[in-house]
Length: 408
Image (tube, rainbow, N blue to C red):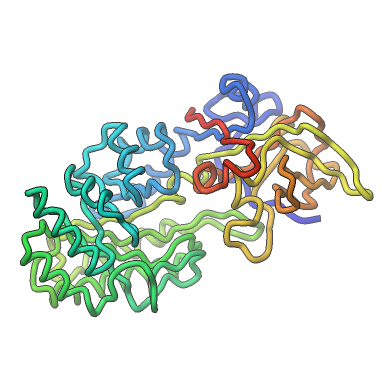
């Protein structure tokens, strides 16, 4: 028997059934008209941002990384909660503009921005986090053609990384950012060329659960920034310190000690060197803001026993939940937090494998998991589905199509 990951706090039951936003999930499925279904909780989003605001020093803003969940309703809800938005494509820019977000609140990162994407961003006043000297040169040329000064920040590839992060974005050779020793000269060049200088972006990694590792990385970022600003010789308008805060997915994972991270950052902010005295500071978070606010609901369409093993076969699967299936960067597959939503909280009575509807052995949602007895028509829930679910999974695989999505 294999344990499932820890279910996030804040989920309750009504009459033995999982409830979100004060409504049973069967009601939400009926409203959506089908399964599979992603449900995102406003209350969870509000609570997470509020907890961050309480823990972080007031000077440090919060940016939402749209790539974590680009559902229009989620972006629109986050607009009133966060200070800025970080995008990674012109498609995400279009989504932000569609819900009325001021482009001045948006920054655009990514190592392969096309000329048409640079032009769209420059035209509306988005800040470009330039990832190379070549990209900066293209942005300056496009700005000159448009008769508009591009708003340019430089993404830095530092010599250090975020220890213990699930995805390292800095340290050594990387496609992301400009190597730190090349940043001052490039910054002086773009300023002299007439760009509107917007600052630095230093993103070292993501999905870290160690407060010590996050505290160390944030300290390193601030120290490196101070040195770079001195070498650039110009005030720094803004520093995007990146993110890094992870969420528990697997058995044994524990939440980040947010209070410790916030206290350490407050201490650092209180003793910033003079060159950073007027710099706007922010952190950039995606998964940490939205991951635990979403669930994936899929209906059991068959129950079978093969060689003594019970399988619950659902109408969902890896085409919507690639990460939960174990096929999104993990080496050893472990069970995400999951449950039988229609008998939520009931004691487990059997060991089952929960699989999806795709014709591949990779389509697994839970292996050898202890669950209460479930039958055809019951709903399975996969938690921590609010980030990198619907948009990061191969929805077109085998022609089953995308899941529905709602915000409640």
